[in-house]
Length: 308
Ligand SMILES: [Zn+2]
Image 1 (cartoon, rainbow, N blue to C red):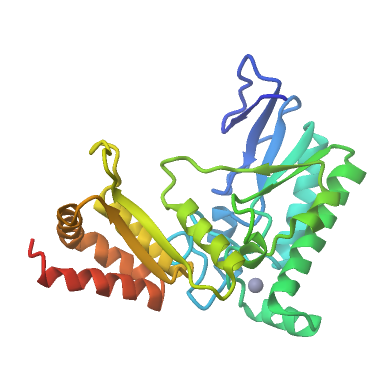
Image 2: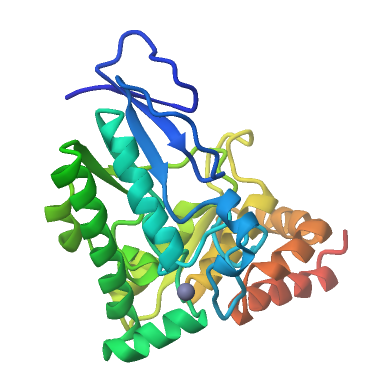
């Protein structure tokens, strides 16, 4: 086992076996590669390219992949994954960076999220392919990664690592990523696990999607611990966390949600706190379509029984 540093500044911390430097993070800023640090490049998450070419942004029935679109887990602006000029420019850029560093580790190699991209070019490419939408997206991601791999491994003769988002089961449905396709193209995989402070309860939403896929037609109930017997009050989730997670699970397809406490009194406390979250409940309205509205309407119904 080896231990690496993964940094935003071109500084090699002492005591690590290898170093990964964010040459081009999702904000789109580009820094010179370092001869003794691997280079980390985000391809389609690119705020700078999105600002310069707003028409390159990925499209969907729930709106474009601007970082302000609460329907998706996008924390930066994400471009359409078939944009030909960006693809071509990134190929040359990645090969150049590979030549000036020990290798390239990629992030943001895929479609922005589920139901992306529905721009006219993608719709046309999809129709011409004769494939299902999901299979067409998979083909796009795989074929582009084959081109990048050829640039880094065959031409620049450097190490190549593909990064994927932390979702082992529904990467294909959400992003067009098929791990078996990519395995022969890469030397290693990188899974970026998010900070505890990451702005969305990513993991609950992901697990909901994963179980929904694995359970197929059988309805999925999920219970959330509100306050378990003996729980330390400082460690139980807040009402706002529970509300947010409920909405995230709703849009990921959960059929029913249970709230777990020891006593009915503790549930009443939770209901009061949830009802008091007026501002958050307003914000959450923008987090998704019908299922999210259903959760929020349900919570609104508590206003009559637990007046704040
Ligand atoms: Zn597109």
